[in-house]
Image 1 (cartoon, one colour):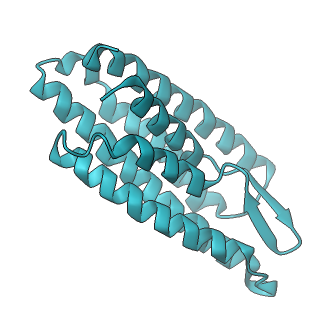
Image 2 (cartoon, rainbow, N blue to C red):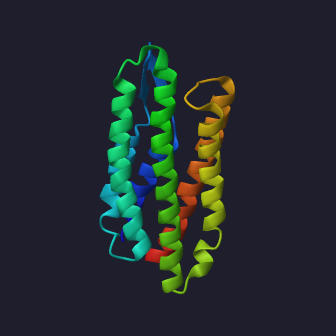
Length: 180
């Protein structure tokens, strides 16, 4: 694994964790596009799938997540009239599920890799970091759905802080684990 792969994955996690939606009438567009995020993740994860079984699961989830995010974007581009809010929430839910699953498998794969290298101290707090990232993402979806309110924007700011913390922590410990 090299620095470029980790950076691609972490930028992808940044994109799939955030929801910056812009609405034009009944059509919603996500600026932090999940398709781009999962594509970046796949580009970085393809070289890591042979490291251990959890990296392989993370790679499979990223491919399925890309397919699901394309379907979610297709749902968003259709003018659903009165059902637009519901369909936007469904498409958001699809991508949230795969974002959480990918980050879980990726985090666990890094933990497994560090245990194999006898450097488990580097990843000691990874499970807590994953929870600190995935909980606000999930809470944002459950509480606010696809609605854009002031409270939703504040929760999204918390998600932004959590994803930046997760990305920098993983990058820092990956430098120690993989010597780059």
